[in-house]
Every structure is written in C-alpha cells, then in structure tokens.
Image 1 (cartoon, rainbow, N blue to C red):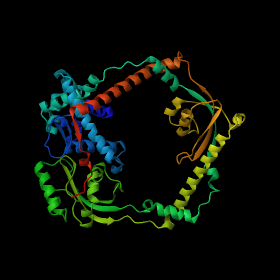
Image 2: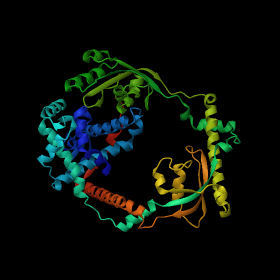
Image 3: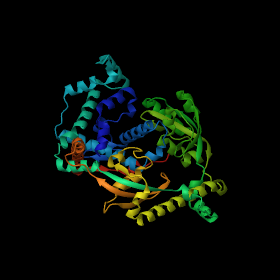
Length: 493
C-alpha cells in the first residue's frame, strides 16, 4: 500500500513532469482535494468523492509509464486488467486517507518550504538559479496561476509528510537483526548431478493420437490473430472545450466517414494496419502507438458496432482534451490453423514435455537412492551462499531454481540429497547433495558489517507494517466506499 505513496511523494520528479510534458499526464494529490460532481463517483473517502475521470487519468498515467519503461513495446491488455484497475483506485483512496490524516494531525507546510521546492526545479532554473521569467512561462503554458500551483505543491508535500507523522521510528531488537545477518551469510557445500532433457529426448515417442488430442484441446493456441486495418484521425495536442464537443458530435452523427472531421479540424486521416486485440502488429511511432494502443481505442475498434456496422468509433479521449476516432477499413477474423501446419511444433512441444518429466523422475529417484558413500563420485564440491541468490548467474551452470532449492531444504543429517525438477527454462533436472553448512560467528566482521543494514531494513519493515495497519484502521473510521464495478471496460457505444 505504501508503495503507491512513494510513487507520488517525490515532489521534484512530479514537478519536472508537470513543467515538461502536457498537463493531462500529471496526476497529483490536488486532483483528489478538489471535489467533483456526484456523477461517475468511483469511490468516496468520508465526504470526499473520487471521480471516474480522476481515476482514468491516474490509471492512464500508470499505463503510459509502463509503456515508456518498455520502450513503447507493450500489450496494453496485459496491464489494463481488473486487478490493475482496482489497484489504481486503491492508490487514490490511500492518498486521500493520508491527506485527511495530514490535516487531522495538523501537518503544515510552510511558505519557505514551498519556495525552496519551486526554486529547486531544474526546468525553472537558469545557470543553476531560480528564474522568475521561466517560472511564469512554465505556469502560463500549463494554464496555472502561481497561487494554484503553490496549492498543488502544498498538498503534495503534505502527502509526503503524512506517513512520517504516522509511522514513528520502531525499535528493533539487535539480536533478531544479528540472527538474520548470520542467516543471510550462510553458505553450503554441495555436489550436483545434472539430468539434461536433451539426453533422453531421442528415445521419446509421440503418437499421432497424442498430437491430435493436443490440437483439439488447445484450439485457441492454433489460430491466426484477429486483425483490423483502420483509418484514424487524432488531435496531436489538447483541444479546447468547443472543439471537443464538435469533434465528438461529428464522428458520432456522421458515423460512416471521418472526412468531415478531418476537414473541419485540419487533421490528416492516417492508415494503420494489422492491429490486434492485444496491441499493434506493425512498428509505430510512440505518438501514434499511444493513440492506437490505448485500451479504450482497442476496445472500441473491436466492438461489434464498429466492425459489423462499419461505423466510426466514438471520440476516444486518449488524455484530457486529446481525442481520436477511427473506423475499420479491413477486418480479418481469427481462423484455425490446419493441423498439418502446426503438427511439427506440437510434436516438439510434447516431446519436450515428456523429456522434462522423465529427467525429473530420474533426478527424484537418484536422490531417493542416494548413498553417502557415493557422494565423492558426483564431482567437484561447490560452495554456494545465500547471497548468490541475489546475483544473476552467480554460480556457473547452476540456475537460480537450484540455488533456491538448496537453501530452502530443511537440513537433517549430512550429507543429504534433494532433487530439483526440470522446467522449460532450465531444460534439466538436478540431484543435489548437501554436504556441509556454515554460518559465520555472531561477532565476525561479516556479520558486523551487515548488521546495520539489517537493523535499518527491519525498522523500515516495521514502519511499513505500522502504516499499513493504521491506514486500514482509518479507512474504516473515515468511511471508505469503492465502486469497482464502475471501472469495468465498456464497449464503444
């Protein structure tokens, strides 16, 4: 829960975004302070209502950030799930609870704090110093007054200060931290035997009946993707209120063509091919991908009304004031791929599955029949540590799954053997013999070095737990109501 607060509490980053990119992507605490109308309320926190448009902005910002992190190559539906939609709403509710808490605890942000925050924004600095001209220019570009902007900063700083006021420092027993530090530094001596799937694959037979049954039971996996080619008109920047209304009415009332809207607003009609329900097949510019890959646009393009009745989509709001509409010019339904075309792939998949199962059984049998006298014959003794779990490819030829199994094993009399089943990622199973386990002494230099970090980690965890419990309690006390059914995706019309 507190993670959502951290995402919003770095005020400097938020202000830089505010001043550099269009205001419609900025979702801060101020959106939650200003009450909206009763229509489309998705949650209420006491007397404060959270409106659907506020949730939509916040959720779209989250999706946009994920897209940017993945370089624009993203399937929006993977992240625009019911769970992620509810998570966004819960984040907004948490912010509102904290804001009301800040007010109740009399958290006050001084004018000096606000001045220092504004002066530290690189976008309004010249030669490393605050420049009033740049500041006024930036506010004007966003349609903000100095007073309104300062109120936003005050609210965001209060949101940042609230958790610290709630979750005071917790005292963690150093003895607990010391034991955890010792455990984190534990090492174990092991010998391994690998059972590679490739060693048994040639002897595995796959029957025609098995291939046929697999095909019949997984028909959805053997279909071409449903695709559409579209014509699109989109505003490259936020439109005025009059333009929004005119555009929305025009594409709806003249739903058999985009030409009138294109001519009226001077928007080019763009053609985009091979759009799938889960995203875009061809490579597009980030700007165009943001429009075409928007969850609302995808839902509209594949609605029955747009496909079957050849109508324009309604005006889809990609971001506040940024509208787009499209129509399908070609539709290619999903079609079954003939068994003969996918037969080699199915046979390969079934052979791999059987090979993985076989080597897993071999490793399990070897571990069960293990004799301590045979330990030395398994090869070189390797020393691995719990810290290796945090490193990629820390131990040559041993995947993370094997290391995890080694330190998850409950030790008995040593040496002892365990088995690690095969997986698609590893293409092998293992028998692992654990011969020894070493934990450094409590007064060793290693433990002393790690102790401070463990104490800090435990204190942070305790504060986090306290904050989570506090917010849960005060959600009930304040009176929180959420309406997740209003977050469901809707059709175009």
